[in-house]
Length: 190
Image 1 (cartoon, helix red, strand yellow):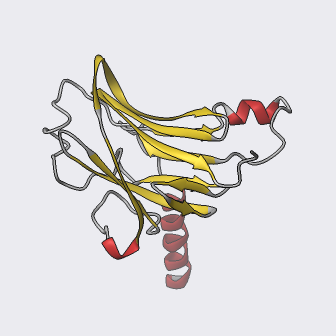
Image 2 (cartoon, rainbow, N blue to C red; image 1 turned 30 degrees about the vertical axis):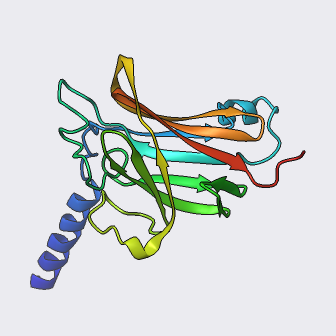
């Protein structure tokens, strides 16, 4: 009898765990952008036969009336380029970034912003939450880009590819700042 009660308690406990409530809606939802732009739509309509060149996966924090650069994003400190998990860049075809070839693969992006330049860091340390475990020994490329001040205030952090032919810029927008990271396709047809 005691064994039966013990087993019933154990099964009831597992049933309780199996029926956990889903998590609440994240305040910084995850988003994805492709090079070429609108790749999923192109693929569904039959206009894209191959894989995309690249995609970026990132968390989208909100400004919410806060001072962003020099405020919650400290100058001269490492930033995960988004919220929650560190931003991921997946390369499907080799690309060149700051005279360095990035082979096909998945990478993590970080940034060290200052008022006049951002240092974008490409790391092979994947699946990081934030920048808490960042390790410089896993860096594979760095590029310096200049942010520009815009008239428009962007409430939600945004990353997208602005592409043309065999080149693209990975564009970062938030608050009144815009920065572009140039990329080029390595095996481009001349």
